[in-house]
Length: 89
Length: 237
Image 1 (tube, helix red, strand yellow):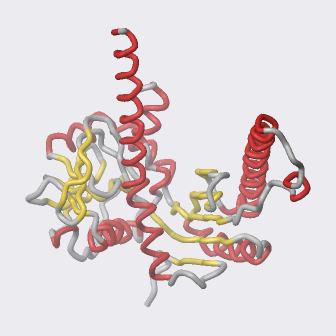
Image 2: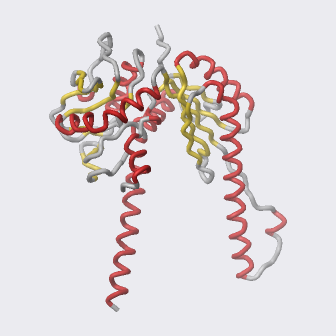
Image 3: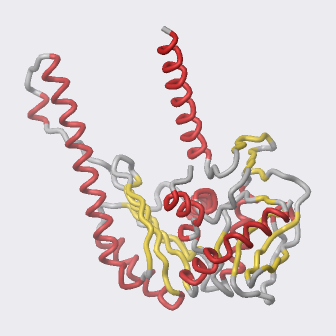
């Protein structure tokens, strides 16, 4: 018997994806991107390879988000380096 | 380490949990009138696997059948000491959040829009110098962005108007430049789930030019970001 809290997916066009795939994608979107966070260190891994290690008070969820953080960090490093080399000239 | 699933303001003894993450049993930890559902694991990392993700949501969903929990984000592993500190220091905010979501679930609406070409064919036939061509291209880009932003805003307003009678609170993310232009999460009282779903069906049939994905009920994942709010409020980064 189904429970009133069984997840229901309503989709206007199901040509491309099966409902089970959509259900998994929706679950991923919810559990990885949202929810309560305890400030602290988070390490997550894919296939037993540690992917992300972040320090205190950094919130990380999906690989996409992690990539954004890493790109921003890289950009800041480049900016910092160019500032330092600019001062040295 | 403790793998935490969710926190509630009431004990739910009648929940029949299947096994939790890594097949570990699910237990409850009580402090300051808050109950945290957790599993004890011998490891300090969690793999992003289909099984783990579904198990995380499944445990939370089991609690949701009895009461509305604040779900933790996937992969939250903490020491007993840190969990105790968290509950001790953030107790008032957690209680306030639990009060806000009491008796509700989250429903999700996503809208996908195929963006049209904002430029006109007439402009393409005009021969221009390099500078003028650059400025025209820039103008097209800006106008295109404005058009998409306005379009996304209109869709968001329209969805809100059609569903607002059935939800208590809303979290909206607009991405005008993406195909997924709107991602809305609605806090819906349990008694209104059926009416919300019916309104959502009408919504979908009213705009055949848009692609909709409506899902739920979920635990209120989108209404649980205490730390994000804390950061915004106090400017901590």
